[in-house]
Length: 292
Ligand code: A3P
Image (cartoon, rainbow, N blue to C red; front, top):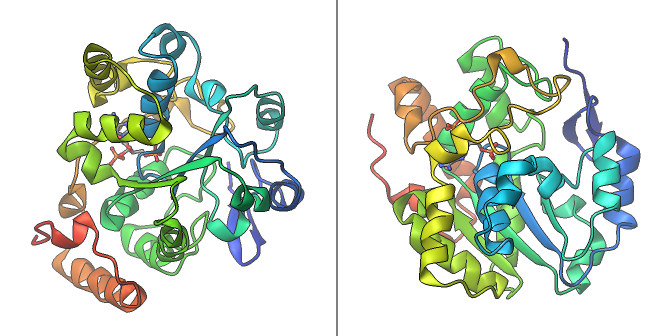
């Protein structure tokens, strides 16, 4: 199946699941509620992981919700069309949604609300590798011709949801707002339990220590991989090629080292410096060992 894109405000979206009308509606008319929670990411940054954590925090550790209901029904995707619209429109308070929208397209009503956003970011080199593999199994992104070309598309923001650099630079402006939590995939990997506690505190949900342990256990890579309600194996086949479904692929930091040549690493570092040097924020991946 050939994936087609349309452009909305200069950003590519796959026609198969998104529409200009819906994006316009979401930005200008969608009514955010004060008790809403939004899980926002650039694709492949740990969205599904965060969905699982937040699901279990909201169910106070009752695992039946995560084992009986697919994640995209528990936490509907705000941005998608088709059957997804009904899921969003009929979602009952307290509503939890996922979204890949860049900040400039996010519902305007959010900015005068008390609703919360959890923004999960990830080392862009690992995002690129994860997206490259995803593009071979999903119909919401064009299948890459080769890794070099895909890297260029990623760095120039020609992939769906645009530039990783613009996405994070846009959302990080919210970092001092009390209804915004910035967290990284690397934070979750480094200390999963501490990260879950931080998310609970942000959401104002106090869980007893054994429940925290259970959330950590249930949201481990292997647990999620074996749970058909969390591993996207039940995603509709117009979105994902189920024969090829390795959505829960590796779940590690630094897999880019297995994909990049020295030249590609140096090139990406140069583009990263150029695009990020006006941002006075250091990220976990800026401090990690990045030698090949
Ligand atoms: P990899 O392709 O590097 O394995 P998203 O949910 O935003 O699409 O991100 C998908 C990435 O998150 C995939 O990365 C996937 O394996 C990883 N992931 C999902 N659940 C995870 C978990 N519990 N622990 C670690 N990584 C996880």
